[in-house]
Structure formats: structure tokens, C-alpha cells
Length: 306
Ligand SMILES: [Zn+2]
Image (cartoon, rainbow, N blue to C red):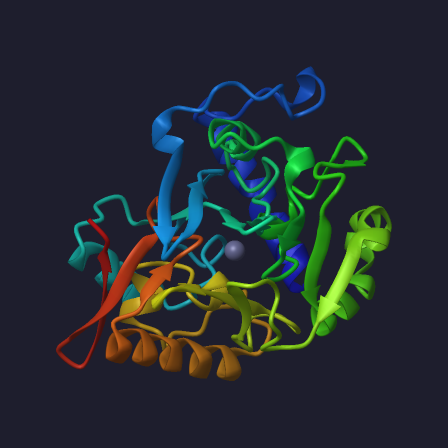
């Protein structure tokens, strides 16, 4: 089973769980995407990187039981130790989903697009974007870290582009992989005319540079946003969990396409973050995903920004 099939299987399972918990909107009632309602203030978090305005936009949460059939980490005993050691009592892995809005001069940039309501998430992105004062038609650039469903799931809805005026930008390697994936053809066909590819490490906009973070997918990339001496690293899925990925970066994650490359990337990213005291943005870390990597004993821990 390839990673998309696994994600789809996990998604089905999660939808079942979520429905059982009565937390999932009624999918049978029609199109999944309701008109955006006003998002609670807690679903957005505005901050600055130098003079550049940014807003964390909550999309939802993926909850995985720490068990072989749901979790990407097959080392369930090691993961249980991490969870209990950090006060997580329910033996579940909680992954928030929060795309990042960046206003870079004239550009209105959205980094990743959330899960589009799949994988048990709440599909809050459009409401969060509205709460940040931005209409979908105002987005000029969508930067994709990689083409898994919780990052490209919000690109299209009801057979149409959600952000009709935006260029969809990703690495050439990721676009090639997308076009070769039969399950993604409906999305590929809809975005094809909007796609602009770049090479790893390319300059994207005045403040944003693509940051090579190899291993998770064929063309996975992070983004570095720098302005006036301030700097933020969007880590993509080089780090999934603020607990497991940070404290046990060497554990194999089955969602990584190239496990050894992904582990090396994870370890060097943590090393760089800690040694340079860099501000990180974890797209799956507890909302709003901002914080720093600190050294503890022989390893690392996540220190959320306060
Ligand atoms: Zn992800």
C-alpha cells in the first residue's frame, strides 16, 4: 500500500472514529464545505516576522491512536513512553493542522491548504482565513510543502479551485510525483494551469525562500521567512509531532517516503534550530505552532512560544 492509500485508509478509520464521537459534520447532507462562519479568535493567531505580517490559521486536528494500524510510528512502546512522559494520558497522538498566511509586500501567500475536512479534521481553514480578513480570491500564491492530503486537501472543493487567482507553487520533483499518482489526478487536472514549480532552495518572494527538507516525499520542502533580522522556519512534515518527532527523531515514520533521508533531515533541522535558537512553525504542532527547539539531556524538546 503506498502512502496515499495508507493515508486514505487512516482517513476512513478516523472518519469512523470521529462519526462515532459525533464530532464529524454529516457528510451525507451535501457538499462538505459550508459557507464560512466567523471563526473564533482562537482559530487565528496573528504575529510578525520583522515587518512581515503572518497569521496561523487553524484547520483542525488529526487524532491517531498509538496503535500499528493508525499511527505512522510502528514503535508503539517507544511512543507510549514519550506520550506518558509528557503527560498525555489517552495514548493518542494529537496533530494540529494550521496552514500559515504570510503577507509579503503585495503578495498574499498561503503555505499549505489543510485537509479539506478529511482525516477527521474540522475543515476550519476558510472560516479562519475569513477571520484573518482575507477572501480566497485575494490569495496570490499558494506554497505547497508536499502533496499529502492534509496539505493539499483544501486546494479544490466541489470540483473547483478554492483560490481561483493564486499560483500553486511547489518543487518540480513534487509536481512530477503528483502527476504520476493516479489517486491525485482530479486535483492535478484542476490545478495544472496554476502550477509553477521551483528548485530546492529557490527564492519564492521577497521574504520567503524554499528550504530543502528531503525525505518525507519526493519533493518535500520547508520555507524560511526572513525580514529585518527576524526569521521563521516552516518545517512542513519534516517534524509531525512536537513530542515524538522532536524527542525521538530517529524513530521510523511510515509516512516518510525515504526513511533514512527523513531521519537525517529531522535530526539536522533540530540541531540547527537548537544551536541557532530559531523560531519554528510546526504545521502539525499544538496551535499556533510557534516555538523553539531546546536541548535536554542527549536530545531535544519543543518549547512553545509564550
Ligand atoms: Zn502533514
